Length: 205
Image 1: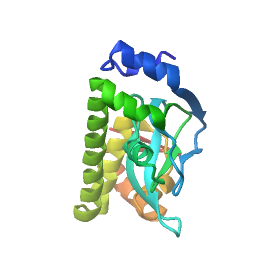
Image 2 (image 1 turned 45 degrees about the horizontal axis):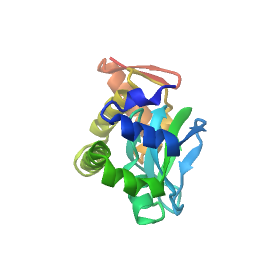
Image 3 (image 1 turned 90 degrees about the vertical axis):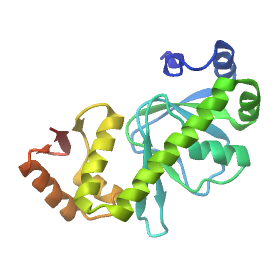
Image 4 (image 1 turned 60 degrees about the horizontal axis):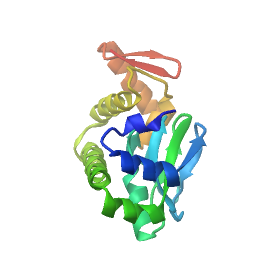
């Protein structure tokens, strides 16, 4: 694919520098891209697909942080790569995904030489921070039905469509709830004509 079209803000010299050093990599749906405790040697730009970024506790519980789609970058991998730290988050391919891996040794050069890359990194930090604030607000201040509605809208926005291919169990895992609670709330949303439910598929109305 012509990945350069995803980053129209990058000047030609920056695109050439990335093309020379970066490596394209594919991940299948369900494959772990980055794990807790792993040293990060590259930062990730998403070309196709969708990546789920989340925290995992020792018991296997999950806290959804945000999703990444085409044209976006993982702020956590940038920070860990620059500071030579291990990852404190998990990154999972939600669907078949293509990424561009930019080596850590190239990061400093890009920051110093290209204003558009510097601005892209700052905007990435800001966007992910805003999404984290939304996630925290949901946990701290919203009821589960409000959290579920917000979750579905955010998921649909990242997927770029109103039909969401997702199971009730996966939603429950992301929202740290139970499948029974999520199924009951979805049924109520269907009765209010907010969604239409099918097997492993939810359509926002």
